[in-house]
Image 1 (cartoon, helix red, strand yellow):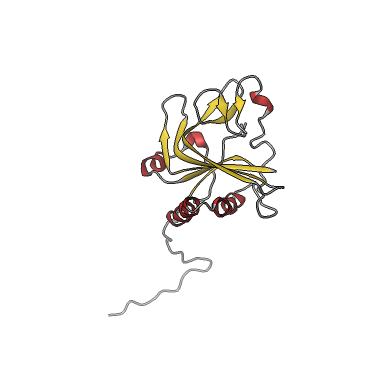
Image 2 (spheres, one colour):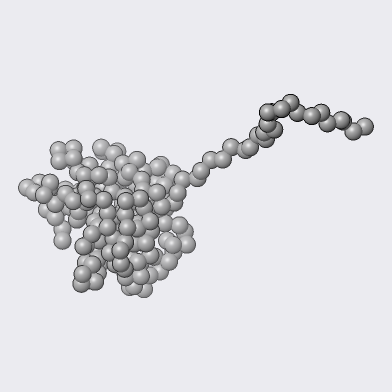
Length: 197
């Protein structure tokens, strides 16, 4: 027997319970390097750290990431370091077995040190370095480009991903701009560290 439908009182609204929607974290959202999720370390996902932006752009590509116990430092292993000079288009690349990302409370800057002592890569930053996590597909494409010696292709694939982050932009190919206080700590390390250039 069908149930009779009763008219609703005036002004009443019929509402349906909607399933809760949780927004998944963006793959390109910048993360504080000192708050690197444990899952990223455990899964050994390829991460890219932006060390320098502007007229010169430098990045570290790291397929292996380990959390250090001392002061919350992060150790990147088997790193490829790419540095591009925007005006000349000159691109240099080198390999570091290990790079430590650490914070020096004395100068309040983040540093990237390939030897763990007094040498640092350009450029120290007052704000934490931005990092992105590469998808498996992009990671393979970047790895293949580096293996074939096509460093420029690897850099371009990564540059567009950093350019999509809040506060970052790319006005032309090969260039990447960042917020004004990002990686601008050359003077802060004077007398304390040797800058590798």
